Length: 254
Ligand code: PEP
Image 1 (cartoon, rainbow, N blue to C red):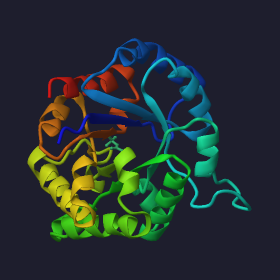
Image 2: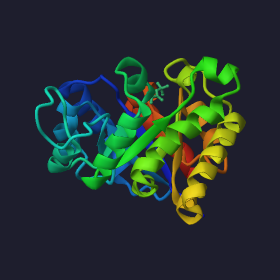
Image 3: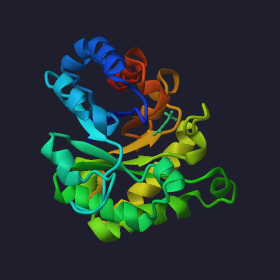
Image 4: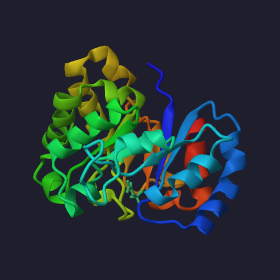
């Protein structure tokens, strides 16, 4: 089935009012033109979400957060809920990013609860899975990413993945300049789609599986050409508008 390519910027903890305004000014003309081949989103730090939501109103580019609580409200100092993200007009949230799992102790079951809560509040999750270098060297890539995905499917089902996306991000490729080869990434994406198909074959065919890990304009085209690679989650290269747009353009020649 034809899955529209989806390119998502993950700004991580970067940006400022001034830098974001410049990014918008540079990217908006291109983002405003209807991109037949590519859906786009920008996931910014929470404090800049209103600026990005307003700034991108005249485009079809969606706006996302990079985490949310598994609770709706209450005594959870410092947390932001999916209900609050929906309240300010946010569309998406990245969940289970490897930096959240390794630096902030997020477990498979916490990620699953967050996905369920986001979906219930109308926020579409981009669920990240990925193996460490050690796990890869031990030949455990498929086992690890399948476990991470199944935890979410058991709790939240397959529906959140339809409006949202699944992102395969090998931990060793994030921010390192080392990307998985298109063929290696394709093999993992196909295995992930098989796991989704065990729940619902028809729905699995509609799920967009993004690749993340040092995606740039010079490797995006070969990645997007793979059967089960339906777009990219882009960290470092999304901070410069021109670099982000160049990756989006790779979808158009797909
Ligand atoms: C990410 O953080 O999701 C990511 C893929 O980062 P980078 O593109 O910088 O590797």
